Length: 166
Image 1: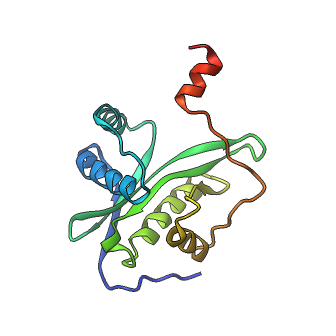
Image 2 (image 1 turned 90 degrees about the vertical axis):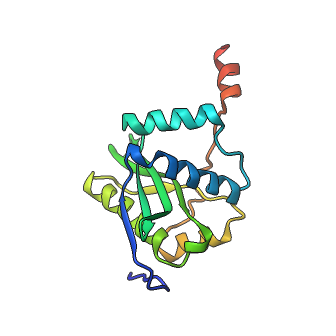
């Protein structure tokens, strides 16, 4: 499937580095505003920058147009005991609204897919908010399928403490 952007804007994608911390935090705040979520607080931002510097907890790519950061993705491996191989989990994919339809989102997803293939992953996973039709349409255009067989559950930190008595 060949997908092309509807613009001639030259998008470059490169791996994130610790020097991208401020750019990434700005984009993360943009994603939080778009998703109507609370962005990281000051302590969270410091942890993010520390994790970025350590380079162990996640990987990522940043999309740029004329040297300006316009989007990013954060991803990491998860492991399947059934296939006995890793899968790639894309935690974030965000492109600033004014740079959508430039191919930046597609370029970022392709880079993560390349990493997944090169590391012998059995596939890629991500989540999308049920109201984000723009993202849902994009994911379906690139071949993404909504998995209706599994229901995702989570425990937040308060639930973790209650469970462990901590």
